[in-house]
Image (cartoon, rainbow, N blue to C red; front, side, top):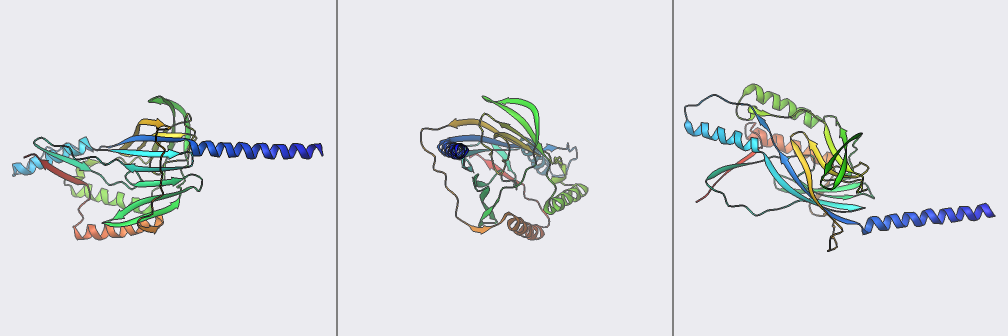
Length: 291
C-alpha cells in the first residue's frame, strides 16, 4: 500500500512538472531578427568587346554579384510554435545608376514559414510563377554533428553543429547544368559557386528551444547563425518577452501541397520556362537610375 502511494505521488509529480514545462513554453515569447547575406566570388574577366556599353554592363554585373544581396527577416516564436518572414522595406532613393542583385533560394530562407514544434510540422507559403501554394509537411531530418567549438554571438555563447545533406535528384541536375554553362562561357560562367554542401549552424543552449530560422531546427538550443553554400544567415538582435503579446498565426492561403510534390512541380515549371527562354538563368539583375 505504501509503495502504491509513492507511485501515485510520483505520477502526479511528473504530470505536474510536465504541465508546468508546457505552460512555461507557451508563456515564453521572443522575436529574433536575422540578416541573410548572399555573395559570390567572380572570376576576373580581362576580355574586351567592341561595344564599350557591353563592357560596362559586364563590369556592373560582376560588381553587383560580388556585393551580393542582403535581406532582413523576423522570427516570432514561443516554446511551441514560430513564424518566420521577410521584412519588407520601402525602396531607398538611389544616386546615379546602380545595379542590384537577388537570388532564388530553395532551403526556406526566403519563404514565410510557420512551425509547430509539438506536431513537428511546418507550413510554408510559396509560389510558382505567380500561383500560390501552401506547403504542409513534417520537419526535415538534420543529422547534426555536434562540436565543442564555441563562439560568442551578441550576448549568447553558441556551439557549432554541422550537417552534410545528400544531393537530391533536382540538385544533381542543377549541378550538371552549372557545369555545362561553365564550358560554354558567358557571364554566368564567371560565377564561382560554392559546391561544399556542409551546413554549419551555431546554436545557444541559453535559449533552450529546438528551433531556428527557415526550416532549420533539431539542435539542443536556439539557432542564431547558419551558413549554407554562399549564404550566411545571422541573428542580429533578440527581444525576449516583448511588451506586446505575439499573435502567431498558421498560414492558410494557397493550394495545399507536400514538399516533395512542390519540388517536382517547381522543377517541371522551371524546365519549361528555361526551354522557352533558351536556357537563360534566373539570377535577377536590375538597374535603377535617379532623375
